[in-house]
Length: 253
Image 1 (tube, rainbow, N blue to C red):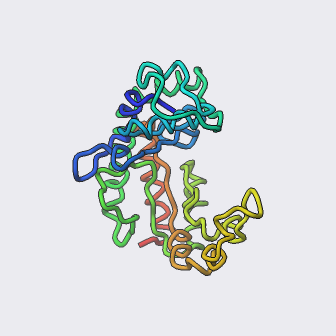
Image 2: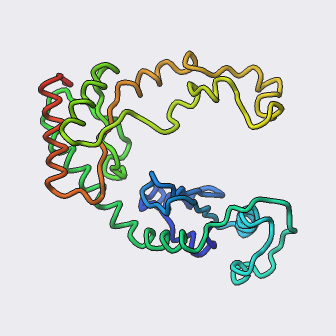
Image 3: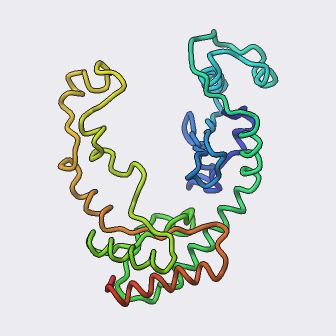
């Protein structure tokens, strides 16, 4: 959790059509800093808001419901009463790592975009090769270049070939198909009376693979080529060569 003034400096180096920085739109913005994110402190996150009451509720929630000394400069004693809450404070060492990462954020984002653009340009002449559709190609962070391999079988073969070439690749990951996840499909919660699924409406909701066949098909045929902000020109060219080799050998056009 970052103080409001500091949190306002944490952004994603991307802007919406209105010109506002992503993360400042809406009442609250949330940024994750776990190990797989663009900037990382190993673990942790930040909430951004311009609403002083929501700001106070957020830092009270992560600090056992109180106003600690570190927040006195921004809110004094606050306007809300204390409440029972959690202990989710980021320690000072993690915070120091995070501060260094924030200072490098724009450089990291630009390097990712430049490398991804070079890869896209290096394979642009391959007839019929399909990339993931993007509403803003130039604004895309560029951590991954996704290829439509046509089928899951062809995707898996393509990934094996590119891994053999020393290129970091994977299928779509994370929580992209939560409906098909066993935990969600079985409505498993920390307590059997968890209200999300015990209400009449919650009981009617059906999850599982059969609820999203098109999504599973789309995600199953896409392979992602990882792009790093510290990739050298040679690294980027290796990625391009691997994609072109797969295109010729497996036929992705």
